[in-house]
Length: 194
Image (tube, rainbow, N blue to C red; front, side, top):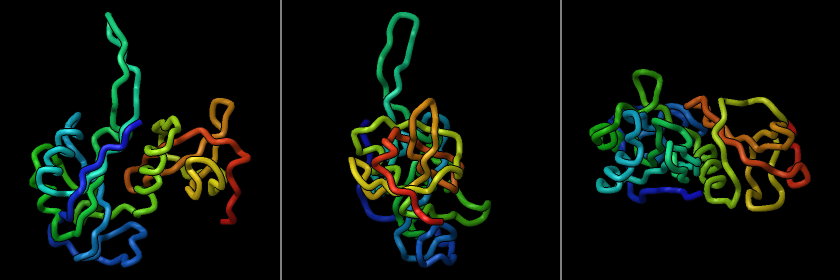
């Protein structure tokens, strides 16, 4: 699995808000935060490339999928969250993102863009970078809260659920209502107190 990123400074229009701890929510003017960008169908990579040209840091989490056609099979990279990617920008730079071809909108409450907690985006990034198979899941916030204590995902927090006879570490992006899972050994995690 390959993580695809675009490095550069900020983006967003002058919407103002609170949440100085970046626990997710309305943006803080001037602070660089993660925002989810909703794109036109199958335009995630094109938007990421356009943002790169505008010197905007973007993160498009992808995973390998075996695609089948009548005459062949091929491994292809598909977005973990179809129709979405993440940008790391200051709220005043969001207009630069909105004006990018293929961008539908910045995810928010209908009026104001809402930031995604950095730990959620970094959790997804860590899973993508690790040598583990990552799969998208429907949104999950149930299961035992855990922290990985050994292995390639050491320090990562999420929920453990049993699925298909194995234990899976689940990390969710609450704003999108989407989750990602990776198989872990129960001996590699410690249960956290709520």
